[in-house]
Image (cartoon, rainbow, N blue to C red; front, side):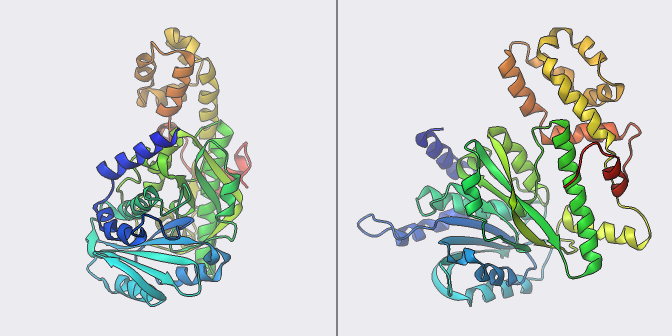
Length: 415
């Protein structure tokens, strides 16, 4: 993509889809540019962190790492839902971060603080005085922070084309930024490796089970040959600014915003995985989101206390997925005789494809050449459709089984 088209996509996004808080940056731009038009020093990197009911320990950890020597802007979106009237935790976090350095700019709900003993600034975003609608939750918090980063990048204030997304419970590795040098040329997003840990044995063991489930699911997708075999965890992501704008950013959802963003952006290029760059995530219970790690850990702890197994997808589901994706190689040449092609697939796969309106998709591609057809198939049978396919098979007598048993039976290994 040319620089001209990239800039066009970014500015279109900022005008039509970015959050209104970016307008408060106008006075910052005036401060940043000297009267003669020259810029002051730019930020090399940017990291967006939503924070709700958090302490400032994540700032302490960041400052203790070598990353604090990088010229980095942290955008911390301190938020809370409109169903929570207790603002004190967020007020304390805002105050404590402000006291860690020098206030160098403020406008409306934004405060820019230079952190003591570092080369880093923090742009604090107050979305607790005006709470976030509950149904928009962490998705809006992430989108707001990234939108500010996009606006700063558009003005040349942030150098890197990569925008980082993480959480306040994450400890970033020293090679966090350097790892991007290994990204493939066609990569539009990356997922860092991760590891959950807690000093509380009960919580730690529950998180380990949940982490194994995540790795089992991605390994199953890889085994089946899926184009969407990547982790969708908001604290381990980085993505290209242009492609982020092309898919209109994080969806405003109370959970699953990371899944839906990657599902869209991965259709524009590759999603890399940095195995040797590991983010440590504090393992903990949580009720801040309706689903995800925190609620899953709560569930696992409850199951363990009652001597029940934590159950997850049957490995046979990935076998059916593998059969379907392998048969796809002959789909284009068989599109005029689709009934025969479908007859060669297991009955379970046929039923799942019926639920997905698969025949309708194929019929709409009647004028496509093979290259166009194959591309449209990947776009259509995306991460969401893949999950729906798996669930449709599961309903046909392949109920979840104990996670340990599923991993033992699987034809693929789980690292």
